[in-house]
Image (cartoon, rainbow, N blue to C red; front, side, top):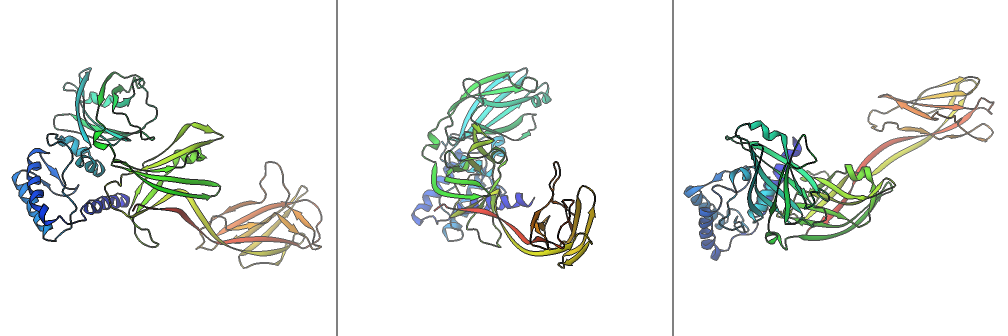
Length: 468
C-alpha cells in the first residue's frame, strides 16, 4: 500500500513538473484561443491529471481560461499548454481513456494514440481493436469484446499479437486491467515490448480460446503509423561498471521513450540465468541522499538473450521501468536487488580446552559451556555461545578448522563422508558449534580460535545516472 501511495505521489509531482516555465505575455491570448478551439474538437471530456476534476463543455473552457489567467499572473509556473499533437479530429473513446495509466495519458496527450477501429466476430463474440499507443519499442493495444447472447462467453478468449508467421518470439507480453460497461462490453488492453526497439507498424491481432491456446480462432491485421514517434527516443550514455561477489554489472546507456525507460547493459554481459529471470530493481528519482525519503519506480521486467544460454549463464540485455520521458528529474539512482555490498565487523578470541578432563582453561564471556563426548570412533565437541540480541547475523560465531595442541602441533577436525564438520545451528539467543576430533591422544590442552561477527550491514550498490 505504501508503494502504491508513493507511486501516486510521484506521478502527481511529475505532472506539476511538466509546467515549470511561465507562459509569456504575448502568448497568452493565443494559448487561450487554442484551448477553446481544442476544447470544442478534442475529447468530450478533458482530464488534466488523474485525481483532478474533469472539465467539459463551456464551463470547462471558462474554468481553463481562468486557470491560465491565474497562472499568467504568477500563481503557478506553467511550461506550455496541455494540448495534444494528435489531429483535432481524433477522439479517444471514454472507455479507452478510462483504462489508461498516467504514463499512457501523457503519451496520448502528445499525439501517440492512434485509432484502429477494426472488428471480427467468432461464435457470436464481436472483437474490436479500438486503438493503439506506440513509441517504436512498446505497443499498447486497446480492444473490446461483447457477446449479446452470452455475456460470459468473452471470458474464454485471450488476445495476442503475432507476426506474419504467427510467432510470438522477440516480445514481452503484459496483460492489462479490464472492466465491463453497462452494456456488457468488456474493455481491456495488453502491452507488448520489443526489447531491441524494433517494433513493427503492422502485426496480426489474434484471439485464441482456453481450449485451443496454440491456435488462433480469429485473426486480422492491424496497422499504425511510425510518424507520431519518429525522433522521440532519447539516449543518455552511462558507461558504469561494478563487480560484487564475482557478479559484474556493466551499464552502457539509459534510453527514454514515451512509454518506457530502459537500462541497457553492455553487449555480451553474461550473468547467471536465475538472476536474469528473477531480476528486480528500483530507480530512485532525484538526487538520492542518506536518511531521506525518496520516490522510486520499480522495474517492470528484465530481458535477456534466451539463445545465449550456456553453462547456466545468459547475456543480460536490460531492465524496463515506467517512462520518465515527460518528467523533469536531474538525476536517478539505480539499485538492483541482491546486488549489494556487505560490510562486517569481527573480533577473534581463543578458547583453551582440556578435552580429556572436559575443562575450559581460557574462555570468553560469550561462551556459555562446552561439552565433550568421546567414543571409540571420535570425540565430539559442542560449544555453546551466547548471541547478542541486537546482532541480526544468523550465525555470528565461527571456528577455524585448524587448532593447536599444548606442544604447538597443528591439527584439523575429523572429516567423515556425508557429515558436516564443523556444524552450526542456533536458536534466538544461543549458537551451537559442533565438530569431531580423531580418537587419539593429544597433548593437552587444545587451543581453538573463534571469530564473532559483531555487525553486518548490507548496502545496495548504487549507479547514479545524470539525466541533464
